[in-house]
Length: 204
Image (cartoon, rainbow, N blue to C red; front, top):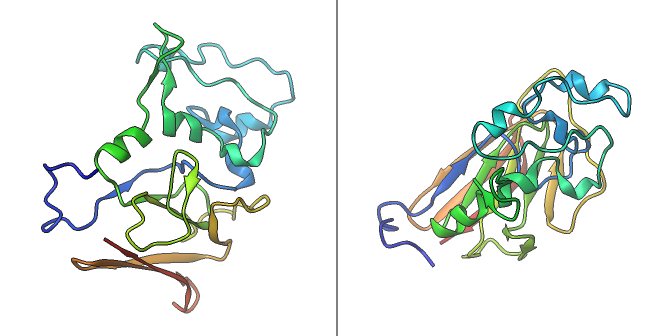
């Protein structure tokens, strides 16, 4: 249900942008130890304890830090995605989750969630709380797009595709977006020559 304090005539689409994806199939995103620590720490041998002081920054905000994970969990976990979607565990009440984004996305009727972090491109079917539909015509769920393939020191490879995947690419590419009062047109273009490799149209 759309909130009444958002004038959809003046603001036809609501776009949320963040750094990390909530859903993805990149192999490199699966390590939750990336959260709050440099990536090179993931190269530490299995069984290595967390560095001294790990988690104190999280606890100062009233949440428990993520587990110090060095083994790759199943690809569909997408690293810290569950913490982004549903929130982190409160340090004062283990049964309580705080700072979850998906409930806020639903509350404010977010249409698109744009992220990077992964050095690839992945477009999902409209999804919320793990359920998705295969249409962009007034879907009632946000479209998640990982668009981090404009250029970096390396490309991030994919694991097996997920059911929610609509399109994936590891080619260097960039996004352009056009919106009017009734539709948002999203195109992904190759960095080499600007040719369109993916396109979708989201309608109200």
